[in-house]
Image (cartoon, rainbow, N blue to C red):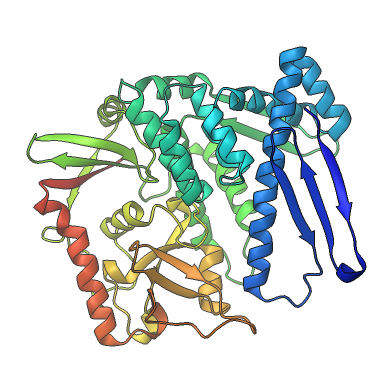
Length: 440
């Protein structure tokens, strides 16, 4: 493939430099290098968007070139070219060439990448999935054009599960076979390093147990001399391994979710709390291995509305929040690393009711209470999120446009929001379904 680069710099564009790359496939990458100092957020966002499209197009050209080298010679030669020309590591070169070969077999995905319509990371996820089993390429491309990485990853996993033909059992078994752990000493620092990879179910269980121990340690700390989150995790893991006589910390260890189809009288759509699909056989297997606390949640049978009777969320509320938010609404941190936060602050009279609670991690909790971040609800999706305080160049925040800003809600707005969430939460009953949560 012939690739040329040309640079244009004219007297009239003394503050700009235009970089243009044209590949043999007809794709052209063109972006202006400009001084970004003082630009508004809107203009900076536009520049970032253009850069993202350029990165996608360049990634496509790079993949096509590497696939051609591998075809003419072999993957070893292609990897050597990456290391020599791009000065990449062996690991990076291996993954670049592997992704290039996978993308070469996906014409539509490659074309979307060349056009700058989907990000490189999304394309790589599609390519990797295609090597693991059947996929609906067109459906994934459409989702990749609209969804962020984390949401797209969940969409992809769900599709793999649905198309597996065995309720995702083979996928889970493959993940279990790939489990690995390492322990070694860093020669440069003398520190000992632990690392491991597990299937989603085992990993979630381990993470939940460690997180519960972290919360226990946090409660025992002097507020004026707290450990960093990383130090607390290290201490929690060490205590669980070296001092097992202290036992596990109290709290929810693992949440498994399934929908009950009242019409068919069976459980369907088994999944972990983060939405990761789970074979029904695995759910049954886990249920037989440990004591189970089953809870069928709906607005009629569970007391998820506590008003001002208590400040902290109950286990039932935390499970319901975990299912709804699937992690921190600000950054996506795992549910077991989150606190329940009052949308309308407790000190301002906010109730400990399910619709007035959201999951946030420690950092996002700090941003909300100390940095002026806003907790908002997108009425189009029904999802809560956080937003930084307006900057000096931002337009005034429009409360009525498409979101509700939580910290200044009037009583009528709060009541309306609660009623909407209550209806949404219990609407599954009218469809003949309820949500069953198994807590290990």
